[in-house]
Image (tube, rainbow, N blue to C red; front, side, top):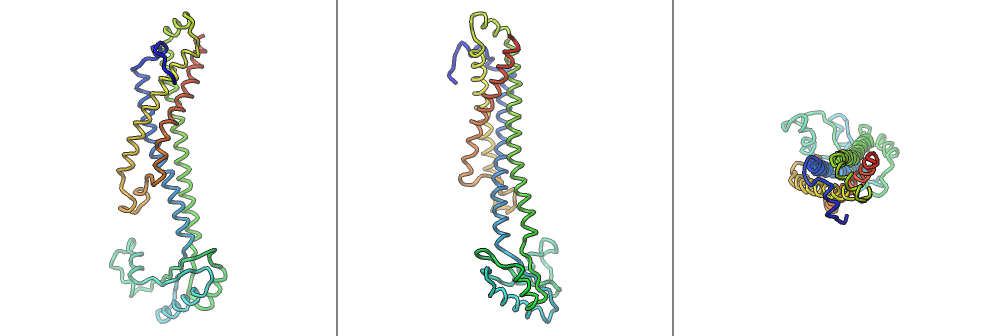
Length: 290
């Protein structure tokens, strides 16, 4: 990366290729920040969904009105004596109303409707034996149906894992796009300066000397553009609503704690991609000019 004023004259300091390199690096770095944020956010989401759903279960009591309270008490007694169950409690009418509010509105008369009673079960240690618990419940509370969230947990975690993979694939595509754009820009700059390169060869300049000037200039341009794009991307991420405000996935998109150490790696990686792409383009183009 050491500069050479004589060799640097071969590379046009401004113009189409310079603007293209700076813009491509800045734009791709900006998108890379969001792709990286997506990958980290989905990783946290997958861990949270897996942990929360894996440690909790739901017991649903469906019984005639006169037997609902008795079966609920019987189910709670069974759960209290079940190894692996840390706690169990029946949800109140207000809590069940809050669960149904998104679908039926806030004025749902839970007390007068034949709605099953829900019991929240929190596990501990290695968890409980689901098959054995179902057998005990069938004898003590025939209207109890155990849902250990397995069928809910697996698709959610799988979806989050695929989103995370999509983020990393996006980062790979962004790097490939930067390499392609810089390769085109370097090739165009070399072709535009064919006469100057010819003169340099006549006075004894070697292709390695000429290629080094192009590699240095385009690597620095990519580094500068990527640094600007990364900074703008981090500012945009920081301005997003926090997860506590909206409570949804998109509001949780961003970096947390040590995650902020990842974006500063984008400019050096962009410079490395530019270095490799420009060197390959320079060697190929100079070889064709021989």
